[in-house]
Length: 446
Image 1 (cartoon, rainbow, N blue to C red):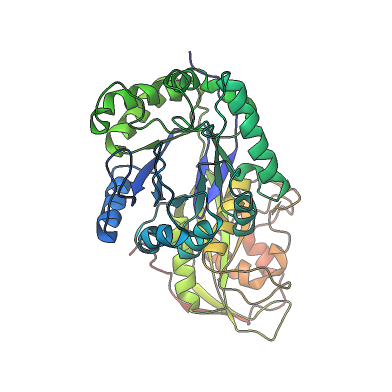
Image 2: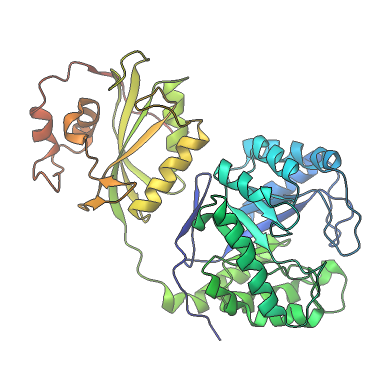
């Protein structure tokens, strides 16, 4: 019954990397709509924030905030009302929670304002039918988008072919307006315009959606499960999730996070055990620099954002250096760190770019001032030459602001192309006087 796992790559959401196939990820539901079908709608901001924090503590990887009920027969609400419900919650959670926040909406203005407030993902229950501009918004903001197949306005008899065709349409539209392939997640839309029999069929045939080669979100929580009140459907939800994982689900969207995390862990232990490749740790070296705003605070924030995804093994002292390439700008603060990671070089690049975006770096001219700059110097002894990544860093050997802090923590590290140690490369530079040690290392773990 278990589906063969096909590599789907990874999706970057702010500074969180979802590496599909390694385990099942859990999206926790926070409803701020008073008429939610499951009876869990929250009316106060404090209650919603407390709920989200509890879900994260229980193991949720994503928090999904919804302000409009999507139960069958529910009445639509205005944009202003939806914003009134969700924005204060999103704003608080973006500051107080480390896991990504998703906004559950099909309205462009609501999604735009939620992203401004700190949301990092769009969850569209209409799969770009109601508002195709959501794809452009996701592309422009660099956030993932979940597209659902919703048959409420067009019921069908052959449900799996209909869902496949609908999701292909949504994927094509998203890609055409610039959403990266790896930023698209699909949802078959359990409970949205399907009969009870079709919902069950979709769970059983979920593996047929793997042909689309995108991660699958399964949302069966408290839906159609036995003839019981919504708060007594845990067992039915658990059964559908276990079977869904065996059939290829990558994310499950649930109300009861603590219990369903355990279901996912047990299901993963059974389903993914023989499919999991051995995870090997790589050693990489990164250079971090900042010359806009509070420079040391920017470096500290970058290291904190990085640490859930990689382990910082060594960190150099802080050095102040002259700018390179464009002199009329503030001095830089630089540090170099050694990290241990299971991320691939490309995934590490995604993480670095995500942190730069999170800390406010914007596209500008070459060597422009920036709040944060993160370069990959070495990744084991790998040599990488691709369109967007070169390892070792191509200008490493000519930059004193890199070699001085690197020599502090790894003087005998050998450059895999030049065959020389960092100490030897540093000795070849004519001058290092422009690199001044300011203080000892940053304590970013506080």
